[in-house]
Image (cartoon, rainbow, N blue to C red; front, side, top):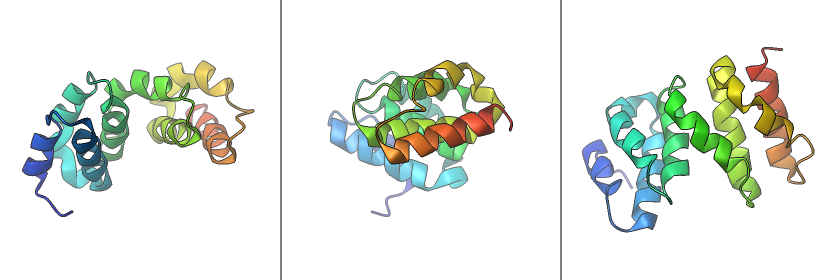
Length: 130
């Protein structure tokens, strides 16, 4: 799974959604080493299936990537607890820059999923600067 970054950036544009999602996850796992992928990920925020994973990857690469905030907030409403967890974690990584997410996060402090709930509480703490 050690494809070059250029190959992964190409895969973000693949017609196959599962390939786009895998590429976004792999790019995100490289963190700041994947800076070059940033504009491709921002483009991917417009794509229905991959957008959430693109948003997560963007934050992992650059915690100032405020473009991903609306998509991460959307992820907080997902029926899958893992997606809510990732959304909250991503927003938390942005700290105070994600303060527009506070109302959406606040609705989830009783989240039935324990991982999502703890990520939400932590994100709120970080964003509110406590």
